[in-house]
Image (cartoon, rainbow, N blue to C red; front, side, top):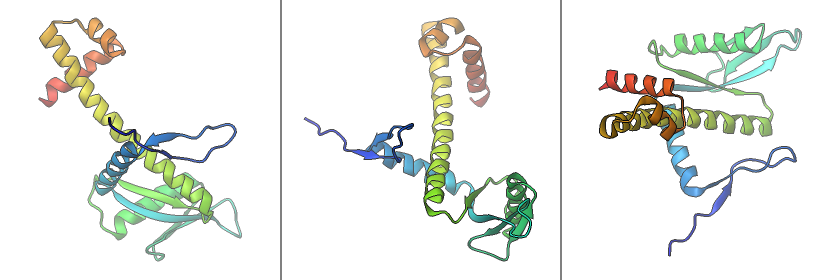
Length: 174
């Protein structure tokens, strides 16, 4: 008989948010997917802080290269500007994804934020895989069983319009 996977804590419990627990196998695969996604992107950590003399501005500098710095009137503007600075400083090829990991010099907050960012990357990777698989299955259900788009939708639990989109995308990609 196979022993069940031990469960590991994947977050901090609060009264309003229960602990999320996942198996060690899932955590290992999830970590590998996040690493793979990050290998395809240019990932840098940037330290964000309010301008001491004018708190309406955000100062931002790269952790690994403090000579690369900028400021913005909002957090979003500062993040956009540091992304442009990274592209210029490191000569990042056009079209390559740049991921800015914000650091706020609050260790607990920074760890939680990094965990959330990793989960978002994982979620995007899982969603891409899911769409690919659903497109394949939708096409096979239609072609092999001669199910209509509405019947395929009922099987997959999605709308018939989404089935049509998935099948069309699958046909275009080959």
